[in-house]
Length: 375
Image 1: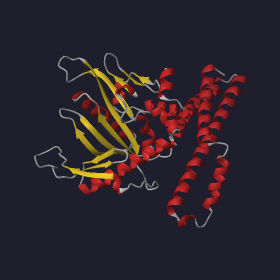
Image 2 (image 1 turned 45 degrees about the vertical axis):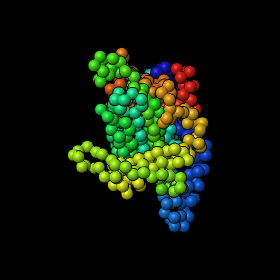
Image 3 (image 1 turned 180 degrees about the horizontal axis):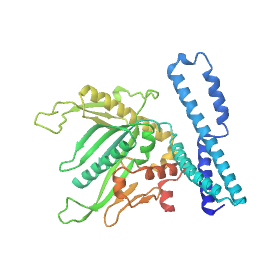
Image 4 (image 1 turned 60 degrees about the horizontal axis):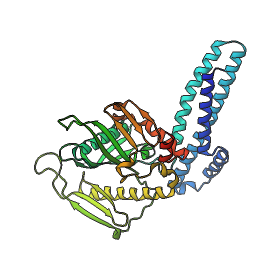
C-alpha cells in the first residue's frame, strides 16, 4: 500500500477512534436495547415531552452507532480491495478503492467534527454579543466588522439571525450589539468565539494612514430552552426603562421602550431596544436566564472551559485571535495556532476551520497557555 494511502487509512482510524470515544462505543449497543425497551412501555406517551426527548436521544445514538459501523466496514472493505488488487497487479481495482478511501476520509472527518458538538447545550440556539473596546471610532468600526462576520457565517449555515439590541458608535460602527442566532448546534459552533479579538490594519480614519491596533470582545451564551428551568428572584433584579433612539425622523422610536435588566448578585446587565416595552422585558429576561445558565455551565465544565478562559471582560492582553491586515495578511487563533492568510474570507464568514480547531483543542483538554507554549 502506498504511503499516501496508508496515511489516509490512519486518518480514518483516528476519526473512528474519536467517534467511538464520544458515544462510548462499548456501551452503545446496551443503551440502544434499553431505549428500545422503554419505547415499548404503553404509558410512555402520557408524558409527551419525556417521550419526544427519549425518541430523539434514541435516534441520535442509533445514527451515531450505525454511522460508525458503516465507516468501519467500508474502511475494511477498501483496504482488502487494495491488498487484493496489489496481489493481482490490478491497477484499476487499487485506483477505485483509493478513490473511495479519500471520500470516506472526508466523511469521517465531518462526522468527527459533528461529534465534538455534544455538550449539554451545544444543540441550543445562542445569543452573541459584540462590544467595542477602548479606542473610540476605530474599535467601534472593528466591532461592526466582527458583527458582520458572524452574521455572514450564520447565514451561510442557514441559521436565522435576529438583532436584539444595538448601540451605534458616535461616528461609525457600533459600541455593542446583541444577536439571537437560531439553528442546529448554533451554540456548539459559536461557543469557542467568546473572548477578545484583535485587529491590526491601516486606519481608514487616520489621514496619515498609520497602522492601528483595535480590540473588541465577543460573548456567546446559549438560549435557555423549555427543558431548562432557571429561576430568577425578582428581588435580585433591577429593571430600568429608557428612551431608545433609532434611525429616521425626529420623532421615530423615541418612546421609553428600551429595557435594561441588572442582575444584582452577579452584576450581569442585559438590554433590549428593538420592540415594544412588554416584548423588550420578555427578551431581556430570557437573555438574563441564558447568561445565568452559561455561568452554571462554566462551573460544571471548568476543565474544558479552561481552554476559553478570560471570556467577555478579558483584558486586552488575553486576546484569543488576531486579524492582521497590514503589513501582511493573516488571521491566527492564539489558542490553537490555527492560521490562514485568507483574511477576506474569514471576515466574510469563513470561520469553520478556526472553530473546528478550537473544538478539537477542547477535546484534547489543552488550555490556551498549553496551546501557545506548543506553538
